[in-house]
Image 1 (cartoon, rainbow, N blue to C red):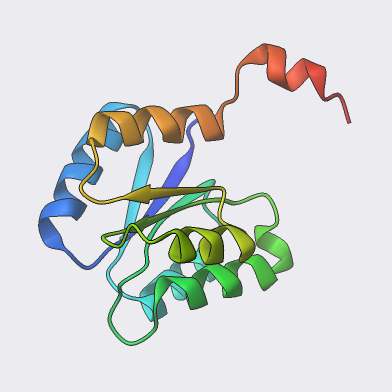
Image 2 (cartoon, one colour):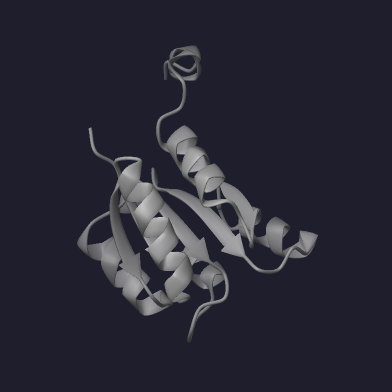
Length: 132
């Protein structure tokens, strides 16, 4: 089964590297460059995971995270927040709004790809341990 990742990021170089590494890992990758595009993209097709930058044009990633979590169709969507800020308060806010992970920039694209794979497809033992 092919999984879809929505990359919400306005920095072109980061978008290109994430697209490359995630496509190599077998994911379908969609891109949104701001909050409005992200929310439209989620309405059009609910992804399996959203890589969501906090610092976006117009609305920030916190608002997007909150709106995704408020959408009943997105209850199974995983969210990894990305931030150039490493303040603990930002991480706490992201997690309290429903993010599954918080990654500080700069990050290893390979490590992020591994994290995406683990979140989308947990090991079989973790799946069978939680049958319900």
